Image (cartoon, rainbow, N blue to C red; front, side, top):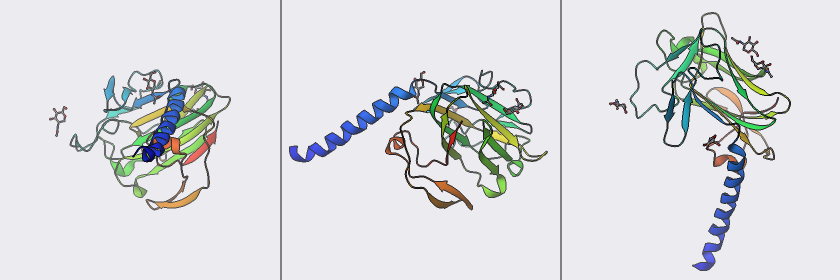
Length: 224
Ligand SMILES: *[C@@H]1O[C@H](CO)[C@@H](O)[C@H](O)[C@H]1NC(C)=O
Ligand SMILES: *[C@@H]1O[C@H](CO)[C@@H](O)[C@H](O)[C@H]1NC(C)=O
Ligand SMILES: *[C@@H]1O[C@H](CO)[C@@H](O)[C@H](O)[C@H]1NC(C)=O
Ligand SMILES: CC(=O)N[C@H]1CO[C@H](CO)[C@@H](O)[C@@H]1O
């Protein structure tokens, strides 16, 4: 019995060290934004801050806060998917950061929103001029989607996210944004390609540390 317990103990010690290491790095520069929401909300694990009136989101005039239509049962839609920021013109978020590595998660619920039919959702997300994600309703199911990125910030002092509709009649939407700093020494191994919802996506086996942050795959690593 005692003999057997050594391995699990070491394992947990390792986890604890890793977790502490990550915690130490995640207490600064982190943002958990529920787009289209006002005030704060709690999902059982994290506190989300609404983007309405937020300093990270300045030009709100051409955008709307929206709830999916038809209304979804509570059990199926949780923060941040229950509200969205939607617009037919470009809108930006700007996060003040210091140089280092960041983990970025974008949350989308590409459903219909009042006067924004799902079929007209078509947009591109850029981060400081790099293209992160192109969304096209034809290619995606209307299910909750999240995308994860590791960003290495070198010189810039802001992480600017732009949401740009692809055509004059299309709109961009975003439900949630999570940004937090991570240790810079995490690294990635071989990349493999996996087919994912009719599009090819680069799929990286993630460093074990990421499993504790809930991440299962990463799409891209950028140097800003
Ligand atoms: C959703 O949650 C609200 C508040 O928690 C509650 O009043 C409402 O009855 C719930 N609706 C459904 C469909 O469960
Ligand atoms: C959004 O950011 C881009 C790139 O930094 C900039 O060109 C554009 O003017 C910004 N748009 C708005 C509406 O602020
Ligand atoms: C980010 O946006 C802010 C405000 O629009 C701008 O001042 C800054 O130059 C931008 N930074 C980058 C790296 O694009
Ligand atoms: C993921 C993460 O590190 N979240 C932290 C962000 O910062 C607040 C306070 O500044 C902490 O309470 C969170 O744990």
